[in-house]
Image (cartoon, rainbow, N blue to C red; front, side, top):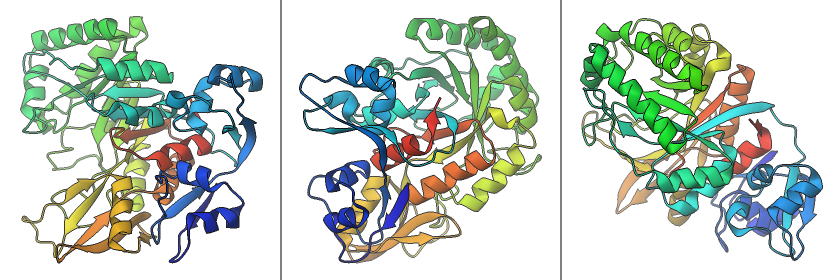
Length: 422
């Protein structure tokens, strides 16, 4: 895979000619709409196929897959949109990519069940597990209802599997550590929670469970992994894995409310896999900066692998960015969330050139809106490739995306080109 950074005056056609690729395919792989030109500084993935099938009338993804000895799912990964539209006569269907891959990887991704249905087919074929977010847990161990039928159907159609999501989110107030504390202090609440998890796994066809308890109290540092061990033991006879999402930290003992109750080593020993949420370093209330700066991600994960088996570890990757008003005032300034594709559109519309921070390994730009200056940080093919390379270098189990509810065509295309998805 090559990456081209668009210069002022370049067009999609001129870039396509330079690399001898199809302009239509270049646009599709990078999420550009019909007739849309790349923004100055926008990074484009240049992908070369090893094998291509020219679709004929009567072809289906199943017939093409049989012909070349690949799975339908692999065709969907290499050809965003194919899962819904099917092969059209004259269409060039990518069977495999020519570039070297980084090996095999496990991928998981969260999504809100209310996600627009047309967004999911682009990402789900590249996920091993998709996670409808979330069943909120009560202090008595009960789980809230979640209308996730449409998402579970989309997951099944894509060939992925799903995990049940359980969290201490208490909308609209955020994650509540006291809820977790109440459960951990009550044997009855734990029994009820485990029983409801088992019931939902059977009822909804999930393969396992993902536990996302955040702001665990420091007093519950030993109780939390003990509960995870109990849950794992209960699900083991059914072959259902227990995944756990944890906030990022880079030392054993911290005073942060977010991580004080997390014992990485004990948690890692208690569950099947651990997703470290290596994102939101740049956040809504903080100063403008990369959401997931690579040096901080590396520091967190280099600590994590000393506490958790790296074959259980997944790197968290953000599928979003933030847009800050300037000047930043601590305690006052609030950023707004943007999608990666929205960020590029903003730059294009404002005529702003996208920059790239080589230290953070993240794209950013400034522009003016209603007379005020704003700063945007987001993710693109360069930042994603840097993170995927780090995950491969560290020998991790894989990566997890928060979240699949936002478009990122370029990201899913690159993921399928660089890795064989387990």
